Length: 119
Length: 509
Image (cartoon, rainbow over all chains, first blue to last red; front, side, top):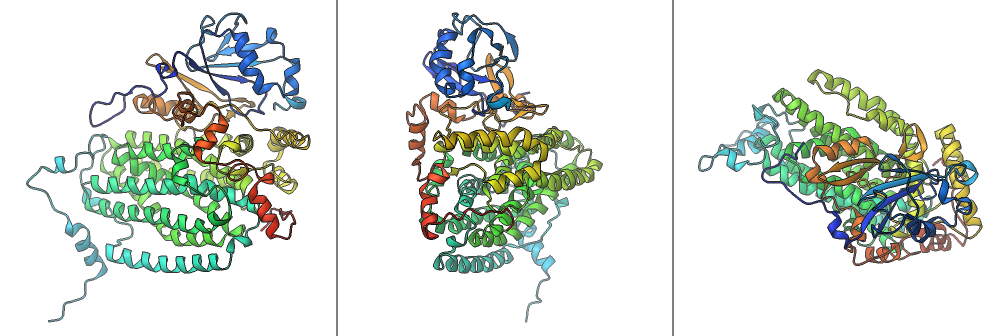
């Protein structure tokens, strides 16, 4: 459907990728770890390897969590934009099919938050 | 010769519809250019029933009388240091969010009613909107005055309008009213008069004013009484508007159904803030969010929609989802407030033992299983000297602008995220309700001002992290924001009470 209006109504999205100076925005969430209650937003270059994103951006947000020490990047169960995803850790986000405003989430088998409470 | 005194009915006719005329120099369609493009068909504006038959001169008289009483009480409140009678200074977080979020919304509502009061071609509707425009302006002003005493003694009450345009949690009410104001006049009245004032207002106003009374806040309670007769007029107008439009033409029914679906869902998402106030910010509790939802929506709301069935109107889409979420959203929202409060203009805290028990009593198994353990973990971190704050900007819904803390109705451990591709770009949402609203008007909602994304684009005063963002909000950590029990508000409150902690030990008033 198109917005009903009194005249031409054509506007560009406020968060279009051109506004990010060559970067993109992505969202990422570690499921069953609701200490950070919302999926988090990251502005980053699309050529960053997934492993670098996890080490330099994701890690500082989560390393205080006791589950973090047991997190094994190699056995994570990922979804990208609602579909199952098997990324290569060394490949860039772009190569893995991640685009501006993509939503990544993963589960780490056996890690379900403090005492299994999902936090 | 003495003039015969006019009856009220005659006076009303002369003072409203009697002042109207058919234009001749310009066609009526050019004089009222906005009341047709939405597709709503009005055959006869004279069928508009005026619920209160209030004329402007009577309106001024009543309102002036109410103002005199209100300001007499506010004066006495301030002269007697009424702020000392509060149940607890934690209560003020509710007032701060009201001042920053709802008071500016009252002002926007005033602007919206000025607009529709010009755009309807029926004089009866125009007069009703004109009075409501004045009411809303009065509410914005009297709220600011009622809260001003607190501004002398506590943080976070300064510069509400500045924060309204910048703070992430205030973009929720702001976008709600701006969405309505940028819609056509019929959508605006359905959004504000019907969905907000008629269907949902009991969930907003009742807990707020009763909460004020339960917690010793005389200033706000008095404001509430002063606004009450206005609110009942607004509610009556809301129902009248919808019935009038539905009776005018059958083609109006599907358009109105879409408006009702949209504005029920937007209003419900906005009310997550109010539910959180009821369950977490009021030291003395009125009722739980789940109880209020049960009474005001599941019973009263459904009865209303049963009455509207004869017009072909169905209960709003996704109302079952809202009911399924009633045991969860306030605990989830408070977790966000607790972890993100350094980037706000209010304080947050962990529920005290008596409150945990009250929440267990009200929410039973759900609270025990999912949320009590969460607060226990936060408490453990506090005891270890590591009070947890989040440093990361969240995913915010493109439609309702609430950070996506909602979970799937069948899995409270998994965040609910929906996505839509439009014109080669991805958009993210908190729910199917919000995704549907976007899908109907993508050209409108793609323009949304999403605070975290504005920060990342460099449009938040150049802030690169939450600390710089808080400075741009003009919020100082400890003074206006962050943990309550290490705040200046708490220190001052304790000092006024002989150095003793006066946190209540029971939820009963």
